[in-house]
Amino acid sequence: MEHSAPAIFVALEQSGFAVAVRQSRWLYPSANVGHILSLVAFAGALAVMDLRLLGAFSATAPGRVLARARLAAIAAFCGLAVTGFLLFSAEAGHVVRNPAFRLKVIMIAAALLNALIYEIGARRAVAKLPPGVPLPRTARASAVLSIVIWIAVAACGRSIAYF
Image 1 (cartoon, rainbow, N blue to C red):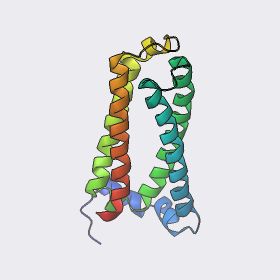
Image 2 (image 1 turned 180 degrees about the vertical axis):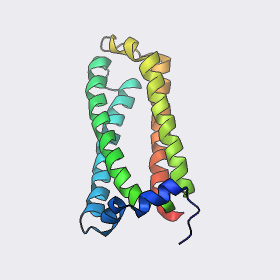
Image 3 (image 1 turned 60 degrees about the horizontal axis):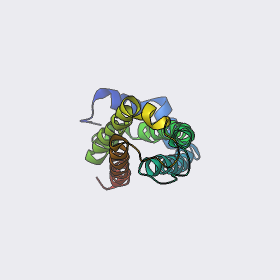
Image 4 (image 1 turned 120 degrees about the horizontal axis):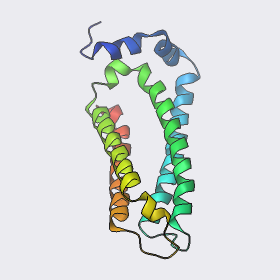
């Protein structure tokens, strides 16, 4: 069988691990459900963080809300990464050539970069603010960008099946 995918992805797809994922009666479907559940948890945590940065829940100090939601987002993102790898490995040679998947990976990198920029540039200032105080423009811009990028990631993820 000829593949135009890079050899590392072909090897992953042909590995015993990926074959087991593909052929298991429960592993691939469980990974799929786990990916969706992780996505729901991640989207919920992101919604809390981004909405707080945009001014919602202003009766609560932003640092407290953001710290708790950040932990949930990190845990859910780890769940997405693990289940996403299981799903990816089963069809790595095919999926890696998919333009929607490639765009999804780029958008995830952009979202993580946006989060890093927020963490470096605004997190400390936001964490110290009392309830009801307007948040810095950079924090609000980061939240808007986060919402837009993660919606694009979800759209790309749903589009993988169609390319």
